[in-house]
Structure formats: C-alpha cells, structure tokens
Length: 112
Length: 114
Image (cartoon, rainbow over all chains, first blue to last red; front, side, top):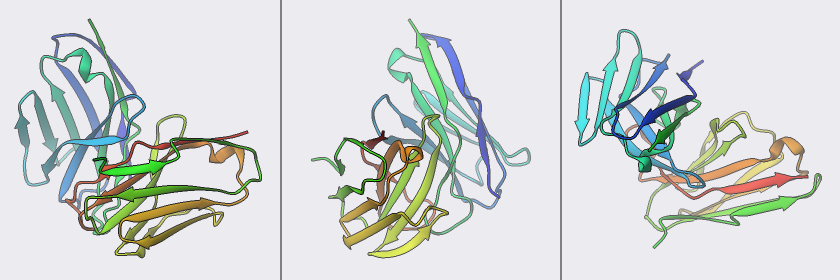
C-alpha cells in the first residue's frame, strides 16, 4: 500500500538551515504537501509542490522533489525558534477523494 | 472567526462509555474529514464526507460512527470506548474532495480513556 516515511527528529541552532526529508511510494499524485503542527494545535498547510516540478521556493522555504527516487525535502533557511514544530509530509496517494497519507512527522527542535 | 472548531477540546472518560465529538466549519467547504493522531504523532484518516455523503471509510472499528447533519458539521460518535481509543482526533475540511485541495484542520480533541 501507500507509504510515506520521514525521520523523527531534527535539532538545529537558530540561524542554521534545516532540511527535513521524506520518501513516498505512490508516484501517481499530482501534488505533495508539507504540513506544520505547532504544540497543542492542528495542522496547517505550509507549502506544496506539483509533481511536475523539481523545486519550489517560498521565502525561507525550499521544497525539492526527486521523482525518480520518490524523495521530497523541505529546507528552512535561517531557522528561527518559532519554527520549532512537527513537520508532516503528505501524499494524496493518487486518489481523488482528498485522502492524505501522512508521514510520521519530523520534530524540529531549534536551539537558541 | 475560528474556521474549523471542535468540541470538546479535552475529553476524559472511562472504558465502556459512549461519547461524541463535534466539529463545525464556517468556511463553506463541501468536504469534511476525521483524523486520528496517536501518541507517537502518527496521523491517519478515518472518515470523509462530501456534501453529507460518506466518501472515505478507512478500516475503523464499527464502534466509530460519523454523522454529518449538514455540510458544515461532522460529528464522531464512539461506542464502548476502549483504552486504545485514547488519541487526539482532528477534524478538517476542504473546498472539495479532490487532490490539490488544501485541508484546514481544527485544534483537535484529546480523548483519554481510563
């Protein structure tokens, strides 16, 4: 079945870049997503990338997509303490129902 | 102004009880979802309704029954609660059911079964 995998934890110093990685198995999806979950809150869509793109940049965020290797990454430049959260990669699994397959989430810890 | 709201925020109950969680969205969206997030933060879809019609029904025990009285509301009723039902339940909504639709999440309901 569909599967999305992420590493569980990343710790960086404030001002450094953070790179969160994700691998997925279903290559038929039109989009791939990154969601952010702050402590005690629901998820918020952070960014997304079309499957026909290799890269998308949005201010401090850069998403890279390697379709051949089914690898997605999220780079956060100049990481701030406010970026501390759990980041989820999500794959619509090619379905048209809105179903999202989430990775396990990567907890980003930003040290001052 | 809350887009997707859930009640209650916390729910503590004993095994065997029946409880309901309510969700409302004021975004005018057609599609609503229930997700379960376990203690390891793993998030999995349970159900989805589009225009009050059930379109996603994952492998969930039939003790869980969603009900959508109208497009703006999706409630989750759980019978005979078990310890393993302890989790955070998130409601979400999107404009439509297709891929590419951003899902807006509620703040979650933390259910603790003792």
